[in-house]
Every structure is written in structure tokens, then in C-alpha cells.
Image (cartoon, rainbow, N blue to C red; front, side, top):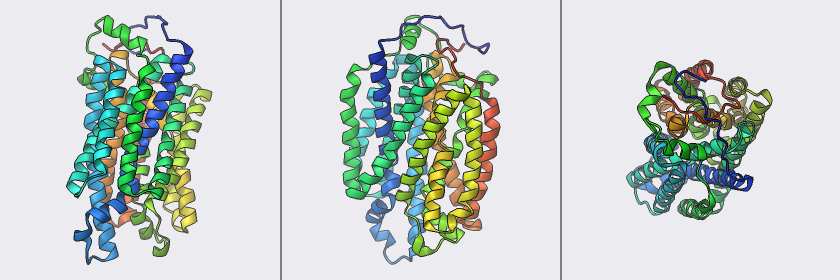
Length: 431
């Protein structure tokens, strides 16, 4: 326990096991829909932009078309959508700590479901980008509030197992998204995403609020949701920055190496006729991520250490990056195999989101657990933007390698700044 937290109260007023199981199930299904909707743009990027930018792309060479689609994709996905995630992460996080975790679960899902339904009717790139920002804002609240609620309701020994289940099930939303987008046209896929979200609202009715939060609310604990407290004192800032930085490689792999593989791989020498399909690459990557989340979560439970599990998966991610820039360009089958392994290697999101909830007291937990994943998702903006900027003078694969050499050392160093939080009592407040 750090010196800026009060001692745990020792109260144990958890609801019945059936009620806890419902919370875990709803959080898992909510994250499934979250990932489904979050990655829809990446899955339909080329199809949708080719339709919306038809006039601009007319008469362009294939190389020029790829470059223009990549630029539009970076702008809409890596910048606008992730900026929505960043802003939403702060707003929903404050709401979670001041007014309750359940209010965030209801409000956020309503926001992103309506945005996705409207996305099915866009007629311009500008409308597309605006609605992806709104969708990102809504999606920002789902994961953090769900993980916070699960972490506070499940016993400390089983907390990691519950959050691992939530993350592993949720990640499969990307796989479902891939198959949906292969069967229906892109506008219908957005409609399905919106309807799935609204259908989840019915399941939320029986979900209970966290007793840990209710005690803090009734006791009028000060500074609930005070974002500025994440940045002061210095020890808490270090803890928060370390929490965020350890997971940046995950979204570099997904947001740049996978989503823009159709640009990077040809520059590495993969024959043009074997150019990878970004949607299929996302699917294979997320199959690996689901396995990695399950593996990393169980591994952290076996080790009884979150920090050590993250460090091991950082090592696996380094190996995956080496394979991506070497073996990945040998053939299309080798590429997809490497992408699946890269997903597994960077699949420590389950441990990361658990750590984000465990590192902070009840009065800041919702804010930290909601903002941290979304700051990590927003990191796709600067890593993708840096890659795009460096690609001009250096080339696509050289730029991607340069960004990797920035991201990985920062993440590995940040692991040292985490405090070990396995089986930590969650009933305390930050001062």
C-alpha cells in the first residue's frame, strides 16, 4: 500500500455469486460488442473509402490509390476515432467515480450504438470521420467501467481470472466482425454493430453496482473522479504513466503493422500479387490476441505477479516484431502465421486492464481504468502518424521499424514503474 492511500475497510458485502457471474458475463459480452464496433472501420476501411472517395480516386495509379486510402484511414481511425476514445475516456471515467460504474455502462453503449447506426448512412469522408469520433467517445466507457466493476465485485484471488475471461471473450468480437463484413456490405455491418449494442441494454437491467463504490459514495469520500490527482504527486503520476506505456506496443501492432500491412509488406519485398488483405490480417491477429489474453491472464495468476507476466509478453512481442520484418515477407502464408503469433505475443491486454484497475484507489479507479486503455488506444494516433510521416523519406517498412524501436524500449522500461498488484485489496482511497 502506498502512502497516498487510506487503509482498506475490511468490509465484505459482495452480492450473491449468481449476481457476480451476471456482471462478469455482461462485461464480457459488452467488451465483445465494443471490439466488434471499434474495429469495424479497420475491417471495411478499403471498401467504404473506395465508395466514398470514388471521384477523388478516379484516374489514379494503384500506388496513389493505396497511399490516399492509407492517409484517409490514418486520419479517420488513428486520429479521429482514437481522439474520441481519449476524450470519452476522461468523461466516462469521471462519471464512473462520481456517479457509479453502471451509469457509464448504460450511457456509453447507447452513444456508440447510435453512432454506428448513423455510420451506415454516411455520404462523405467528413461525415464518416465525425461519426467515428462520436463512436470512439461512446466506446471509451465500456471496457474501463466493466473491468472496474468486475474487479471490485470478484474476490481478490479470482479477480485476474474474471478479467481474463472478460478480455478473452471480448477480443473475439474482432473475429466475429471479420466474418460479418465478409458476408454483408459495409453499411449493413455498421447497422449490425449498432443493433448488437442496443440489444445489450436489456442484459444490463440485472447488473448490480459495486459495494466498494457505494461505500465511498455514502461516506462522501473526497476527490472522486478528480482527474488531476492522476498527475500528482509524482509517485502517482509515475504509476499512471507506467500503466499506460506498458501497453502501447499492443496498439502499435494492431493499429499500424496489421491495419496497414497492405502498404508495409510490399515494401519489404512481398510480391504484389500476394499483397495481404488488412481485414483478414486483423482477423488472424485477433485470434492470436484472444489466445494471448487467455494465456497472459492465466500466466499472471500462476506467477502471482502481473509485472512478471507483462515482462515475459514484452519479450514475446520483441520476437514477433523480428519475425514480422524478416520471415513475414517470405510468403502470404508466412505473413498470416507471423501476424497470428504477433497477436498472441502482444496479447497481454487482459493483464494490462486488470493492472489499470488495481493500481489506484476506489475514488480514482474508474477514472484510471477508463482513461488508461483509451490513452493506449489513442497512442495509435501518434505511432500511426509517425509511421506515415517517416514513410515519405524512409519507406514504409523502415518507418515501421523505427517506430517499433521507440515503442518497445519505453514499454519495457515502464514495467519497472508498476507496483505489484496481484491480490491487492481494492477497498481503499487515494488521498
